[in-house]
Every structure is written in structure tokens, then in C-alpha cells.
Length: 180
Image (tube, rainbow, N blue to C red; front, side, top):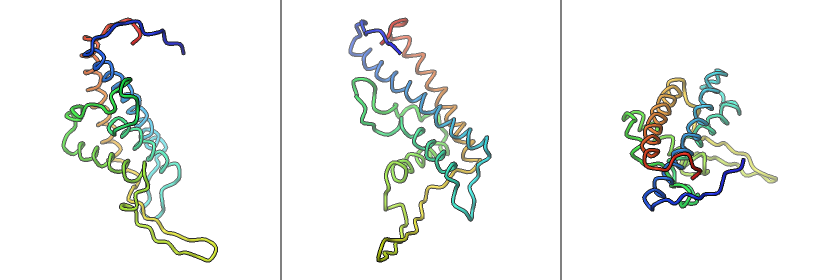
């Protein structure tokens, strides 16, 4: 895809708005990815078992939804001249206290278990053997149940609606019909 060269002059305030718009645009993509993972879990009727570990597919989709959902809310290493590193925290004001609690849980899981193997939240028992080792690892991350998945879908819908409202406001202050 070819994007025309930038030839629009922006004020410093407009540059800040453009960075915010780009972050929100990337957030929209991330939320769609998380939504897709949830919808796939529900469509395939993948369920967690109380006696067996989750299937690799369920665990993979759960990991994908956590990563995609959390990405806009954690400090990234991206170029701050291109986009803000995180979405504005005020975006979360559209969530109920229960939804905010689930949001915080997702970020915590992402930070401690998905993006990092944090021994503080993982019970590990190892048996060292002469030629290797055996181990038992009790990870606290477990696939979500149907109620949690539906709540996540509602949260994503609310966040997407708020993003669209903010896009509209920013489009009123940025030049239209030009590549930025």
C-alpha cells in the first residue's frame, strides 16, 4: 500500500491530536482482535474443564484476547512521535465498576502471566533428576467462563462506541481529505 507523502502543516496542538487519533485507531484494531478471539471461543463452544487443563486452542485464544485487549492500555515502546503510547485513561470512564475490575484483572494477567513468566504468581514445583527434570506448574490464568466472555464483549462495545465519539471530535479539529 502506498501512502502519499505528508505535505500538510499541523500546529503543535494538532500534532498532539493526531498522535492521540493514531493511538485510538490502533486501539480500535486491537479491540476488534480481542473481540474476534472471544467470538471464536463462543462459536466453537470451547469450555474450560474443572478436571483437565484447557485445550491448546482455548489457551491460545485466551492468551490472544488478553494480549490484544491489554495492548492499548500498557506502556508500549512505540515511537511517541507517531502515536501516544497508551490510550487516555479517561476512555475507561464508560465502564461500570464491575467492568473496570475485570479490565484491571486483564491488565494484571497480561503483565504477570502472559507477557512475562512471573514466578510470583505461578506455583512451580520441580523435581531435579539425574538427566533432566520434572515439574508441575499451577498457573493462575484460566480461560474465561461464558459470563465473563459476554461481559468482555459488552466492555469492548462500550469502548468502541467511546472511541468513535472521540474520533468524531478529533476529526472536527484535524484537516480532512489529506493523508496525515
